[in-house]
Amino acid sequence: MSKTPKLAGFAAEMRDFALALPEATEEFPWGERAFKVAKKAFVFLRAENEISFSVKLPKSAVQALALPFASPTHYGLGKHGWVTFVLPRRLSAVLRKQCLDWILESYVSVAPKRVSAKLSSG
View 1 (cartoon, one colour):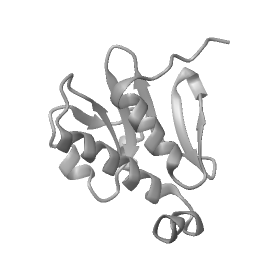
View 2: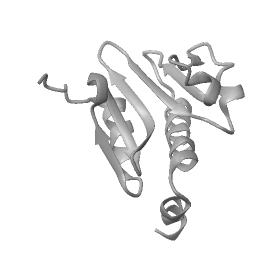
View 3: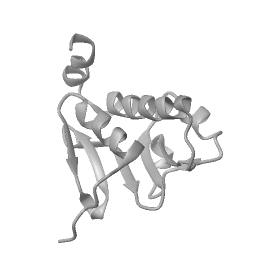
View 4: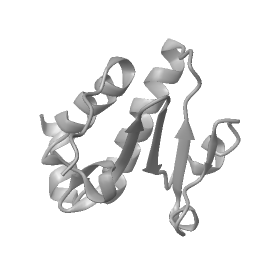
């Protein structure tokens, strides 16, 4: 079993954000880092030479896909609202916040209502 590399910088911040969401877990299917809620993935994160991540964006996919570093997620997921981002090396504070907002949108889109309700009650 291969060892998963530790995340640094913004990738570590993204991981911490995802895991702070109610009932979120981290798994490693196919050697890739995945964050799930109720056994459903809401983020796939890769951080080797660059940071890339995939999220389900039912509300903002059209706008997100207009960005030069965004594309529909492969394996047929793109047609279900999944978007993959390959982030530029330099990230503005605005783009960092937007990435976290995309993670949150994806989480809310797959989490059971009883779980996502904890966001506003917590």
